[in-house]
Figure (tube, rainbow, N blue to C red):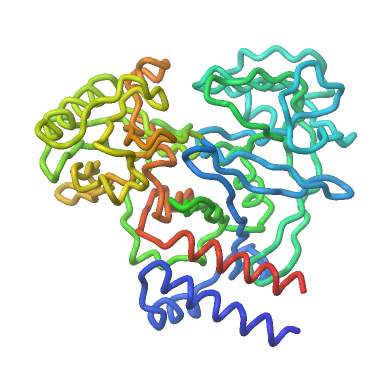
Length: 430
């Protein structure tokens, strides 16, 4: 069995290299010489934790993972959110106000986290939080779409698997949410949210502080639906990734240090220093009003004289176009649209480009129209922020390296990676 696992892992790594467009020989040599050092255990040293991702941008409007929590472990569907820190479940504490959920409500453990716990203090760093009871840590998280969760922090067992099949069962802090308000964009049953942000209370930060994985997270979301989420840094070749430094000022979010310059068709739009945030909790991309207006203006100008006209009766998204007949796929219509891109400075003279091709900012609606998946963020209270949502991160491996304080990306066949991960998981279960 051990020999089979080792062989499978070698195949897994090499095929992943091919799916990412790497040279498998180069990638294997890089992995062979890699590994953790210091206090990381041998079991965690060469391993990542990988989750299959389910969902899509449209029509579902979310991506989630299944995580087994509790004793005995029970499955929960958690929405991916790199834009927030706290992981929480709808909880029978009892529940004051809960939303529709795909599974029975979480039954909380008796391991309450007190106010004196460092994680509780880290959650309330602004210092103006008043504790109702010292023996428990209350929380309230609010999201940009108006949704929120109110509850208390508890610790419970998470059942996870390393890539080579070893089981990991850490006790981690999570929110027992007994009062939820749905957001304007929350139209699906959910058990809770998987907070993947940069804060100490995030699941990744907790796993890292316990010595289980490196403080690196990544995801690869397929435009066909599904994908993978991973913790750790042994599933990619860092030298093949486009990197930009993380902002130290905007430490709450995964934001490039230098503001981006918006390009259309390879040419500048004149908009620079755009505050940009990579946020997997947002299905669509949001630009501030100035950038949004610039994009819609150049798109309408480019489409003048093309066989597309604005659709007034399709309200899937704010801006849709219809053709002479319904479209079946983006492939039919992308020839009419030019690519967008954000250019980030990485040094005094160097830059790196985050490309957003038409298929990463358009959808085909149920009516067969093509709709713009970039929305006006200023209208929903995002002010000057620009969110790169799931639609614009599809078919790329996005990496958030909190150890090197860098954000990276590389084109990838996320559907192939998802299929490969599923096959490996079946072998390990066997």
